[in-house]
Image (cartoon, rainbow, N blue to C red; front, side):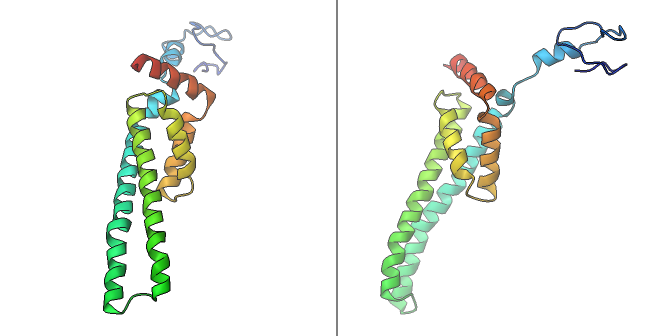
Length: 167
């Protein structure tokens, strides 16, 4: 914090500027009351994890429930891909759907845990954040935001304090 008259650096709790003597009004006390990064962003982060997980769930279910029947229907009509391609596509689509649904489950756990300030949720969210970096554009944005909020060591201490108070 700096003096608004002379620009000198001020320490937290100082009542007067050491250079010009101007009284510091409320600013130094405000610095002590400032919310930390985790407390300022944890609720939004939890909500975003729940929202992106809902979209991942819809995507996974769409792949699982729509893509396979469409391939079967196309095969019955004789317009689908050749038999050997279809034999490869169905297991691949199932695997992709399972991966997307697993990612959604991880996100739901992270979001729910962050909103409830569970001790394990920070680690789950960080793992999800690293994985989300590879899913542009929204996953990448959420991954960066998650890492920015939860990765620093100060965030670890702040989250641990909040988790212990919530327990």
